[in-house]
Image (cartoon, rainbow, N blue to C red; front, side, top):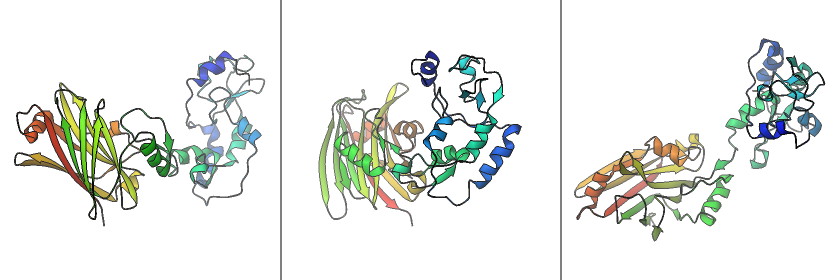
Length: 327
């Protein structure tokens, strides 16, 4: 299709995947497909690229699902884009009307395609109408970069992201399941200019590191233990009129695996202490989502200053923690 068509350019900026709507006319097509979705995955199935192109909406470039519309000249369009082109075919400009392309819908029902995450390790072959649902839940789908210091758009599997965090974001990597983290702020009224000092002990060895964050109000550390990777996140953020400090752990993997682990965080001073115990969240959940759900150790500023002691003009928090695997 011509790339200069103004309809195409406008629609591609608003592309979205449209779930196949329920419709009596397509029951005979869809039922047999969904019934076969749980059958054994078949291999060595090849679908010609020309057939795949026929099932690609020329406007949003997404795969088309029933009802698939066509104009009187046979040009097809997905149901999501039809109202956006004001009932005019974006290819020939003829009126679309309400013509269904039942033949193409039946062709789609007979197809089986590989998962789009095949390059990440998924070897499954799925019925056309079940493929989209599978891909939204595929265990091989890539993860978003869990770094909290910026809006990073990098995606990949866990080994790739670990290397990315280390090389591109300069995140410190540590081995072991226990840690001792000191957070110092010269002006606790602000949520920036933080100095992070970490003392990490792993049972057989002790590692000391000084981490300075001159312009960030968030910091991530990565721990390797039990053959897995965990992101420890510290952040000062504004809640109402005062800063609040939060620390939590995220698991670099899926939620069903994260539930096999637990962790504890402890902060205190002046003879008092607060303890948090929980299950690490998967990095499928962004750090902002975890933070906004308050799923971690939360310290109000006044309490943090009380723990710090002294004249309460400098914040000095020491957070210790432990990760363990549930039996």
